[in-house]
Length: 347
Image (tube, rainbow, N blue to C red; front, side):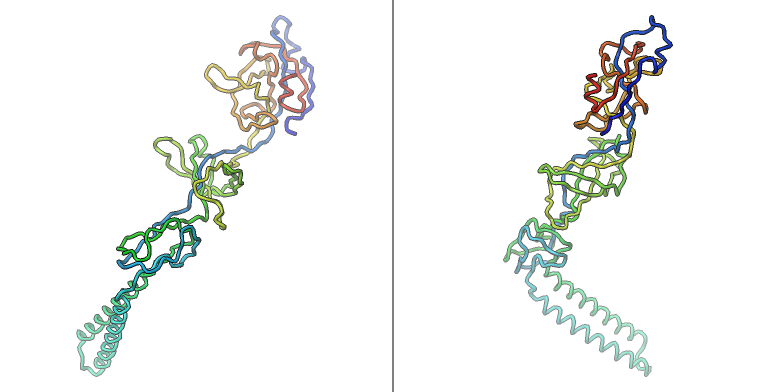
């Protein structure tokens, strides 16, 4: 268990207290020597799940809606039919364009044979070729128009909304359905400017929804520009959602391990604030002088509070800190560091 280091030292063996005259010694305090341990620092983010993309699939032609095979909430694959328009005379227009192209092709081949016999000029050959290319372009356009009567899913997704019904008239630009891409699912959050430099794309992330479901993902995006109002940086975490079981709009807490640091386990009751409102601990220096050492809280759990900012072997005042002032020279009574940080504080 972290914090278990059986250290029992007489007061005269540390900090040079044996060499000090009795008249220079002030209050007696109890001191624990707490060694640093390697801990992983985490950044916690609170955000919401968002679909990778949401697209309004629109008609490119005008026509009457004759089929809507996709239902709201249905999972569709890329290329599945979402909405179909009446072909009207587009089939006839395609046959006409095909006939014109075939005719133009025959005329062009005939002109080439006449050219070999020196019976046709280069200008006439160019005109025949131009007519064939124009007919070919018109044929391609008519094929596209006929194909566009079938409005297909541009990607795998879930049908979120139906905007037209069978029998409705669609104009170019009319939305047929709204399609949502749910895989991967994104968790969108914001990180402070003090933490953004510690995040790197590709780092694994672990999180939980409000209902307690665990999520595993990868940090896929860290913004280079902060939000103007909050001065925080948007980040995105990609989570595999092949089965589409993660819904968009869920509140999620994500945890990202960013670096390994040295930290000390202390009792929360030992923490205090200085006059500037900075959190820290009262410790002893090599001359047994009381010093306020600012710390940063790394983690808080049932064992105690993990903090960073102390020396590798920190001499922390555990009893009597409220009776001494910064700069006082005190007489330390070193105690055994026992099972937990809370027990240290009561010795």
